Length: 124
Image 1 (cartoon, rainbow, N blue to C red):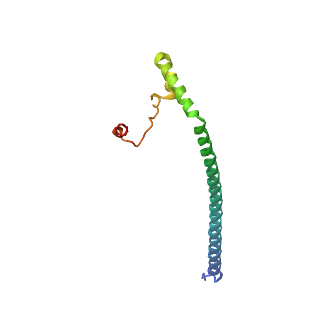
Image 2: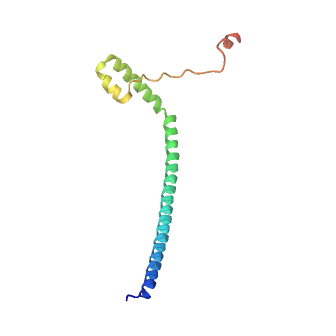
Image 3: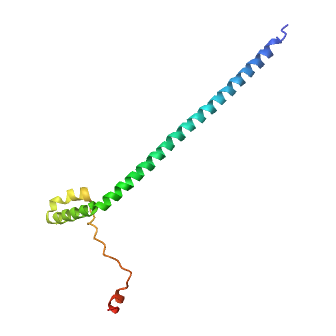
């Protein structure tokens, strides 16, 4: 006759308990790992934001310096001269289109006043 061994269920319970403890430890280790990874990514992104803000401030200062120096006006003059040259020499069209596109140079804006056109003559 085969009698069930009283130690067998006890061993099974211990094995199940051991597996549960290992699974719990693995879950906790995974949670700590995700927490560390999240913190590392946060620090990295924060440093990138600080760097981008610093570079943006430097770039905006540089752009304002360039705009005050008169370089854009010089470029527009050069573009206008190249446009005139292009109209006289059609062979230059592919080079002009490559670097300046196909648009004509922007016309200089006319000074705008808030005075209606008829009011200036009436005041004389």
